[in-house]
Length: 219
Image (cartoon, rainbow, N blue to C red; front, side):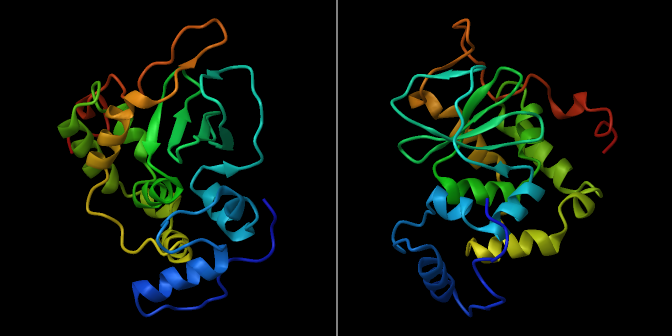
């Protein structure tokens, strides 16, 4: 990522059309696409900085030997603090490969992924406490995590607002668990992800339920 200039310079747009027009002009994409090229992200310092604060470090594609993806092409555009990789697939979906042997689709495209990151930056907890993908557990985990007092310190609202303003994402959704559940569950068309020895990666759905978290038991 190049650091220096941001996409916007404090412009305020009065409506969605203005925001999308500003996005189109700044990033050179068609409004009807409602997506963003990964190179436009890589080349923008402000987006890179904000994504880093959301635990996604944007970088150039790298070839690694700790996972194999059976697809014609892909772009490993980012990493998180735990060593997981974010992969852009040829059909625009975002595949996540954790450092602990799980993999799956998080979003249908980059903008949907960025909406998830900024609307539910604790998305990994929603998956971790899903008991194998039970939607009601995911919704419970989201509610509990959303009310956590540490959120304001970890992800200041001003930072979230700026990130969403840049990308014209609009207000955050009331809930992300259902969308995340759908993306992970319906990722049957995903390319196969395996370890170097050929063993398949597991689902992103964790094996715990919210009550297994001692800090949530009395919530």
